[in-house]
Length: 588
Image (cartoon, rainbow, N blue to C red):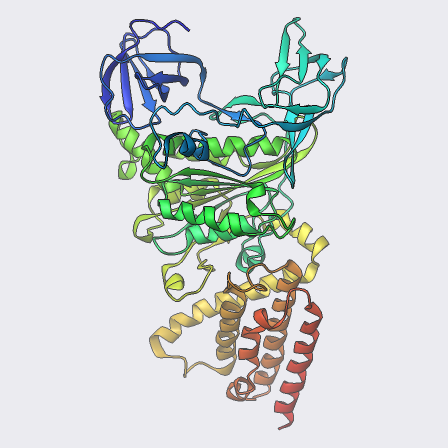
């Protein structure tokens, strides 16, 4: 492309660069800025000035340096080689950059997103004369030992196959299929394609979210479940365990692929993710966790504008794998840092601020992101889903601040982290009185079919006991627990078993880090059985102190450790022991 002499830098304000009297650029176009060709995007055009958001450090940039347009929007390259990789916010591979420039990323690093030298073992699945439309699979290759990559026709393209390469080894940019469209134009289809990050990939139909994302975390699966294709927010102040909760979900949830976006987080947290995921064995396949994980690292010391792009890069990669028929979970940690990047750039653009200095378009940007989740039927008639779990970091644990409040508007699951629970070493520190899930109605038929009606019944009873305890604790704070009648003392004691023995979970214990739904149901069954039997004794005027001395309540707290996940028949012994012990108390 010939460079227009007018297209030179006029002004620089941090990541915001202006060009005067430019006529060749279009809105949202990707551009190269300066002699070092820094990546940028057009975010504003007037008759006098064109405004560019630069995704790299602008230190040393000078007025008069050239700005070159690409003619296409900000996009990412989609193809084999994405998995088991770590990218920055604009899909530059950090491992390849490290090999090229050392530990520190040099500006203007022109590294291909995907490894163009690597050969892939490709099976072409179409033949000459086949009619293909957007989303149809024309080639497959094993991207990792557990994920098969499917190369799909770009969504807006359709035509007849006129040439097919044979099965064999190919680079990502090699042509494997030639397509002739209705206008007679030929299109070479390689193993990769490009897609604009701010544009959702099209689908055939959005489906109802009727299948839960199984996480193995009892407080989530039982009390506040999320659906595959659903959205959840994890708000919490500093030190409440947002990142650790997302790590746990990424390790154990039953999604096929995990996209982890470290947006503005500390560098040591991202290095911890790298270390943990490389060592962790995927429970489903026995392979390393990295075989189905993509990491997008945009740490707090990286350019602020790229932080804003990293969220869109992550969701675009997620949609691409969804189109292949996979269930994808994207962990965004944290959307508050992303919103702060919006605020900083908005300030440099001298836009009118809204609440707490955030731009007036914060709600619409949040909705654009969360609305890209969903369970869908793809263009190729497969079903896939994107589940978004976004961490929110309200300053001072103030859930009334704008990012938390606007996130609540667009998510149907709210896992509120509690500072007092975290400080008491209760993990996950999800507060059961402030949290909620709106997926019960959608998911209950699945739970009934796969786990049994009892699961829903037990969950309601457990929730009721926790609510009653919450009300009683207000009285206890005022006048103490000694004045409460025995039936109310029983509720408090049962709630303690639920809190410590059921809701609290140990990520470092082999049997407690992930708990199958059947074990969760049986744990609730045993706890509620003790409550029911003890309630009958209290109603018969047997003092609760005698029931407490039996040690049954303490024994049930340890049940999560004492019964392995593969020996669920042992729960029957506990029910038998409860009946025998309490009958001895009656006869004593």
